[in-house]
Length: 99
Image 1 (cartoon, rainbow, N blue to C red):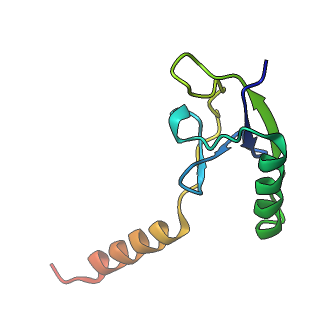
Image 2 (image 1 turned 90 degrees about the horizontal axis):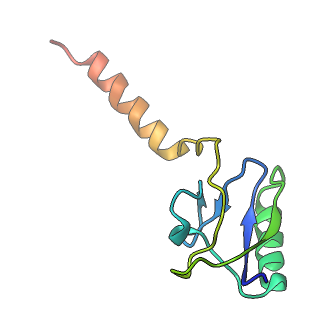
């Protein structure tokens, strides 16, 4: 019997409690919905913000610890654009600094 529903994208990542995609290695971080319609509404909101999103609501059983039993994604999470910009700015500054 299905106990919860989770949202999965085209890369196998799951929508997390922190309102960001997670790879599923830590099931505690995955957002779970008790009702399918709640998960569908969340997926609708996500897809309205990201037109390239191809997501689906998947049923998931709960483990003895109350965590969803899910398969972690083999695809790595994308690098945060803001963090990448900060890193590249630091590298540029270090290259331009005199020795």
